[in-house]
Amino acid sequence: MLAASVKKRHGDRWVVFGPLFLVLVAVAVSCYFYEDEVVPTDKMVFQNQYSAGPEVDRAVGEAIGKYVSVLDAEYMDHDCWVDDCPRSSKSIPGVPEDRALFTTQERANLEGHRGRRAMDRGPVSRVRLYSVAQQPDGMMVAIAEITTVKCLYPGSKDPYSSSSDYYRMILTLSQEGYVVLQDSSIDPVRERLPEGFHSLYHNTVKKPECAST
Image (cartoon, rainbow, N blue to C red; front, side, top):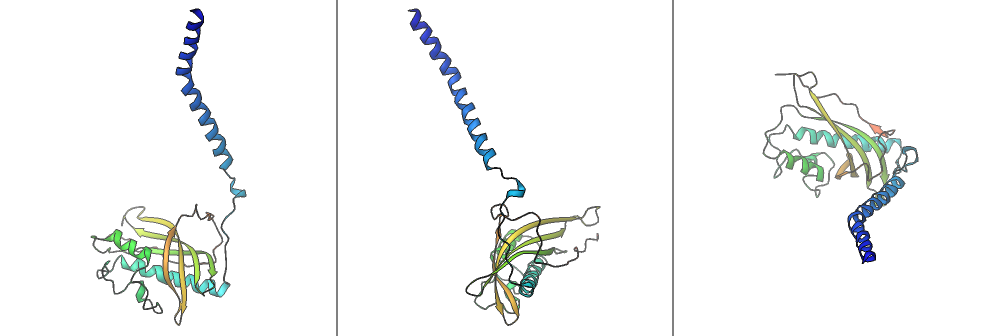
């Protein structure tokens, strides 16, 4: 009888402390693997930075700058809508006639702007080119950081707001130079892009006018 009582007490203790023990083991194992996955910055392997040569890099960077300036202007264009936009990026000289009216990011911008009136002050975007790689078919694949500055609080002490995003862009060469055919937003962490890098090309832009009216 005594042995049965002792056995029951041990069983009760396992019921109480068993799940807690399993939780502690699970936490310890997860911490071990987490620490194993953390890689020091100086040992991280970043995505290769390709160059097509200084002249081509510059031409590609300038084409991207022209493209994003059109997207910036669309914020102030009263005639630019998702259904119709006469001055979309397709209107850039050299863009093939069979290209869609909008690129992926351009359409996303307009979808996000749907139902709002055109802005009085458009944003200004700065281009920093990370990589340019020529494909077997002659197309150029570029990765660029685009920093967009907007005037959100005119007349205030700190009127500007800025955001930086990374994009992969496909460009082709036309009689007018390189033109953007398509683009897509990318995650710099997943793509293993460094926070700071020596750009192949960058443009110089002024902040948008932000005086109070």
